[in-house]
Image (cartoon, rainbow, N blue to C red; front, side, top):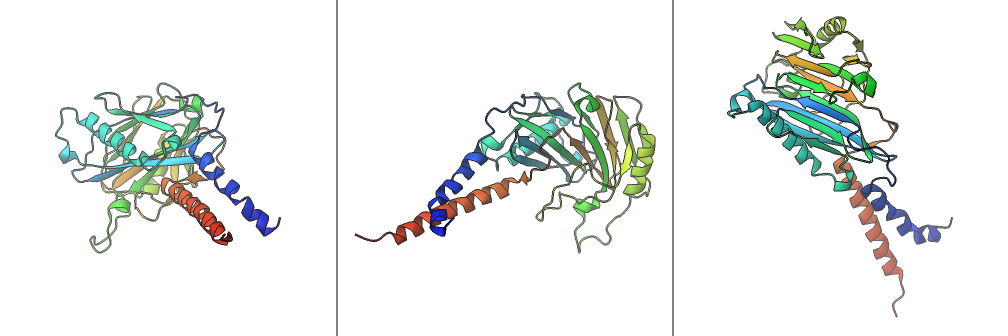
Amino acid sequence: MKPTRIRKFMPALLFPVFIVQFQPAIGANTAAEQDQLRIHTGLPRRATDSLFSYTVDWRIDDGETYRSTGLSFLNSSKLDHDKPEAYVAKKLWTAMKDGMIQLDPNWRGVTVAQAKEQPELVITNKAGYSLTNVTIRDYSNQALKYDLSDKSFSAEGVQVAIDLVYTADVEYLDDFTAKKAHSASQGEIAIAIDGQTPIRIKTDGKTSKELEQETAGKLNFAQLAQTPLYPGMVSTDTRNNKPFDGSEIQLLNLPAKSISIDISDPALGVLTKFKFKDDNRSLQVAEPRFMLSALAVATGLALFYFWRNSQRKPSN
């Protein structure tokens, strides 16, 4: 094709970008509320501002994958409320609501809801969208429980992973702390399946990998894996997104309806991951800021084309 003909069809190549990005797929067949994850919140034990964040990935049927993150800080000394557990849930709900602001409304394929005055959040897909991954990062040492609203993880094909991490990875600051901790301090890890008697692991001075090995050995249907359940987020502007540290506990076929995780060691945090069924895993995730930048570039190219074309027209 000659260059002049390429320029002639340039607007036709540019403007469909806006149509594709802003509208969900026509004839979408994923039903609303097909995918659900319920988070039962607890109370933070740490009397300092401690990070809690969660990232939800979803995709449009036969289309792009998107994500949003809600980030908050919890402090046990700042919970002077009649229902502190419900207040924690409200803070986390508000955090995701704020995270969604960066996305165009037609890209928002999930809802995060809190039942009135209840200590729980429910993450649900909208019609024409489906959940792919949910990552919860807790450094506040609160007891957390997860379920699929009375559905079995194995029956729904939802895989689970637990990655024990160091609190220092998000709290350590160069030149302000003498030494970065690379082991637990003192406390306990308790994990319960379907409300049964939890397995308990003493953390005293052990490394995160040692604790994962011990936990996987005591937890039914668990295995210690050297590759992550799914690739983690990559970001250069925040310490919230921790790189994979080489091992995690995976429950790939968990025949249970709930899992509870409670860590009382202030030197430890936990990343809990949920991988939902997804037929389009190869698609690249579109970050809110990246998508806005892409649209800005497309707009600039279109404007430049019309300006340049007008400059070439002979004057009468």
